[in-house]
Length: 119
Image (cartoon, rainbow, N blue to C red; front, side, top):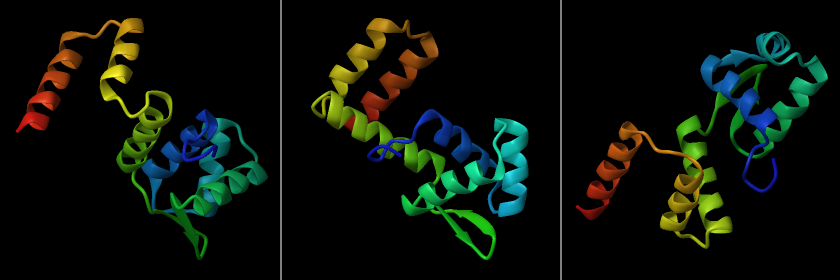
């Protein structure tokens, strides 16, 4: 992890854990071989790093979740907004929307979010 942001490969691994947890570490090795093409040492290295970051826990050869995917993504988003956009959500959304056409569902979700923030 760089800072509090996972690399793409770490996130792919984390999504396997989030979907399977609690999961035996041996089963996790098998899943990572199947889905990511990783060998056992790679799986254990990434697992150790994410356990040290406090995202997962590996006790008695069972991997459990300490931070859910939603919690992690919320923290990561806040860090990106704070570090890249000086904490300005409006600058972040403007930068994102200028490169990506929002569909009606996304626009409605943003409207709903803004209305909730105003309440």
